[in-house]
Length: 134
Image (cartoon, rainbow, N blue to C red; front, side, top):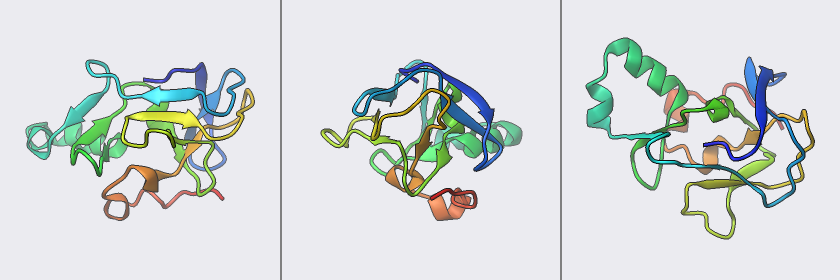
């Protein structure tokens, strides 16, 4: 669940992106996994979905390396784009929690970017690095 005000818009990196709708100071929690809102799916649960639902879920979910479950953000965080120099990422003080923090100060209107390698297990298989920024 997003913890800061955001909006979606056209991204110069790839299609749709998430943009800050407020000033965010470095270290501010940006997103956290919220049971009952966000989803964690096992491969067996994913396989029970209809083909269109499975395809849609795989388009936005990621296979988490620590839980080996697919994580699906229920809000616009699913539109985060990849960057090798992200402005948000795992909390460096507690990287095992499902909490992302601002790695830099983020200005209103700035696209919120993450490094997919921080949490994707199957990144090459799903081709998530096709659209990148530096």
